[in-house]
Amino acid sequence: MVQKNLIDGEWIAGSGAFRNINPSDTDDVVGEYARASADDARAAIAAAKAAFPAWSRSGILERHAILRKTADEILARKDELGKLLSREEGKTLIEGIGETVRASQIFDFFAGECLRLAGEVLPSARPNIGVEITREPVGVVGIITPWNFPIAIPAWKIAPALCYGNTVVFKPAELVPGSSWAIVDILHRAGLPKGVLNLVMGKGSVVGQAMLDSPDVHAITFTGSTGTGKRVALASVEHNRKYQLEMGGKNPFVVLDDADLSVAVEAAVNSAFFSTGQRCTASSRIIVTEGIHDRFVAAMGERIKGLVVDDALKAGTQIGPVVDESQLNQDTDYIAIGRQEGAKLAFGGELLKRDTPGFYLQPALFTEATNQMRISREEIFGPVAAVIRVRDYDEALSVANDTPFGLSSGIATTSLKHATHFKRNAEAGMVMVNLPTAGVDFHVPFGGRKGSSHGSREQGRYAAEFYTTVKTAYTSA
Ligand code: ADP
Image 1 (cartoon, protein in one colour):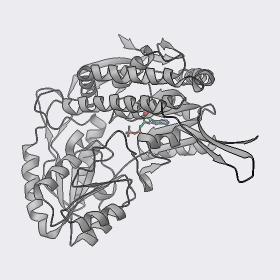
Image 2 (image 1 turned 135 degrees about the vertical axis):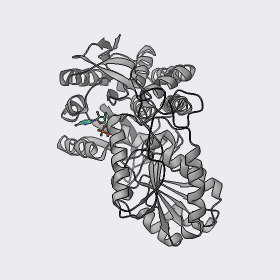
Image 3 (image 1 turned 30 degrees about the horizontal axis):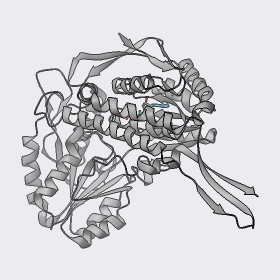
């Protein structure tokens, strides 16, 4: 059965269908999904525009109830949806279920936020005049998402968009439409009026581009590559629309001489390799001071050798496959580049055979890398990391910040002085002390600076910045 697009409250067959393939077993077809055309995208935008006046004035209890029901159903089905996610994306079942629970928490959080919409009342600078400051929805929000968090990223964009009274056209990544289809189906059955949330699955260059080109999309929230992010920005400037971009990272993880070795190794292995290194918050630059360098590298080697790389759905798997062949090629290309540049491939990097045909890669760790090498400057987006040796904390901080990106930044240290200094001086939107660079909470702001991000933060109460526009009203009485 082909899963269809949702346009104006109807499930619509597209022009043809595309297949969703399991990266742990390429013989396993997860499902077939209707391919939306540019005309379908335009119909979805028109439906969202028509639905906006009523939804923007809908009662907070109606919005609360729909988001609450959605949170409840996602949680009740966490095992099934987590399995679907792991099957289509390749992260382990524990990670897939964890991400599904997080999606539920996000809907739950924004269900609560509907009940806490507030403004400000101030006296005017002039006598006998009052000033009210309120937040209003922006209008039709276009949501474009990547493949690496198939349920959490759609959730953290759709939930606030609806909470604050916007209508939505949602285009998920083509590689992983299953989780997106499932949450749209849940929201639809939870009682959303027609046209409030529209799903258009298909190619970025067709469906996504039609969204970028439409003057009726008032805001676009995008997570994906730097190149596509630039397109979103340029098209949005053309239409004078609000836009928000989350793009790449090249996140540093600093290990100081005084670090607890086991804390440092666990956090580094998690940062670099969990979720197969396919997180924008992953660390692929591990910056280590010379006093602990050799002990750290030896301990990392032991950990890497022991990592179980296998089918994402198998019990005991710690690292699932790479998401598809083109990403696998990108990873192995960077491994070759690192060698050519003179870094030493100390551990891993081999393609692996398992019971089923899939994109299995042994996590790779380079040593003797410099921060000028391409493997230290460009986002790889796979289980490939490099250790850069430095003299001391000052050099570590300067190498950590010497990057075009600025999403997340981590440090392993037992020194309060260095931890505090690093929190203040790391040029990143998120800083982690004795924790992996990845792995964030659902109720606090998420986002970066420099080349990683543009616009206001996502998640938590800070999401209101993007999904609302402020009105200042004056009344003379
Ligand atoms: P990735 O390398 O992670 O796949 P992309 O930036 O290519 O990153 O994809 C992120 C999202 O952007 C996907 O949903 C993709 O379909 C969409 N996309 C790709 N090209 C365009 C485009 N020209 N216009 C709008 N969206 C696009």
